Image (cartoon, rainbow over all chains, first blue to last red; front, side, top):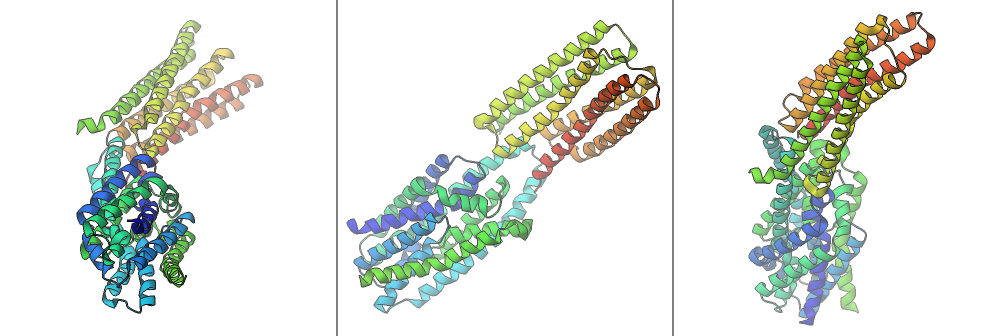
Length: 305
Length: 215
């Protein structure tokens, strides 16, 4: 049982880093209090993991063959990588960290399933692009509805608040369903956990990370990249949730960070590119490139020791 | 659906009550100035000035009530800020009413005949501007369809007030009245002109609040 501590650590760091993607816009636009949003997100993450987390686990557990020892090293190195990025307040992809670490093991074992890898790497480009496209489509649709409804601004206020809570819950559900594979798929691959236990352990550990350590990254996602008004916050949440949920059905664990950054860029494109901070964007992109490399290097180094 | 908007409805009712007090302060102010221009008994002016102050204070109390209600998380922070900013901007108008009446009261100012009709005109157009601004606030609390149209009318009225204000100033300084009285009248006219200027600023703020919510 001690061996899954690495998985729990990774789940915890995933929750700490990725919670900003489902509740960051709502919290940083001061729509919801952090504690309320974090509790709600943890609950929906667990539900998503238990109800729809299986297909991603199938994909990741078949990427390479590994021993239980190597599975633990994959979890630990991915967890360390994501935690480092969380400390420097960068929203990174846990999927990339896990895949990077698995590839590190594959490199040592001299075996990688290239078909599965191709699907995963393609999704790294597809996710931010999908997030941007979804946010543009959702923004235009909701804007038309908003302007046609002709609510007074007090009524609009109430509907936005309800919308953000609903979208945040859906986003958390999609996060749990899609990302639980990153946390415990390697243990399923090593034959150490059943899929059901893996979804439960993964869901609980992600929830723990959200509750205890997710506040820092939220500032980067919610307010530094682009100033979000409550309406845009709602669009970002919905676009991210739909994009990630789509990949859950495809069976590929993707990055909610990439989906949400893509969605925020989509809003930035609609409002004028000058609203997007190029500097912040560049540091986020460099985080995405470095993440799989650091995780792979860490796992290789750990195996050598 | 009504239960969803219960607290928002409370805010709306309080803002409407605030506007009602503002309207009453405005009526008393207008009558006080008329009484001063007509040269009626000074007691009438005093009573009307006190009434203006009373309704201004009542409006202040309602504003505090709205603030307390909103900081109990009734609205989104953005809307809270917009409403409080709006009420603070509107609140400058009864403050100008009081300043004008206090100038007349404490300096025992008598308006010379040569500017009476223009001052009457300035007050009349300023009060129309205030009425339109109140209508605009009410429209914001409803559906906001008339806001741009009212913005234009208020802007025109404010320009009209500027023209009258300049005319009064010219009349004052072209006349041979006592230079000290000229300075007193100048101060009075400046504050009278501020009423429509402030109504115009409020109107522009309302327009921005409305535009921010169109996406």
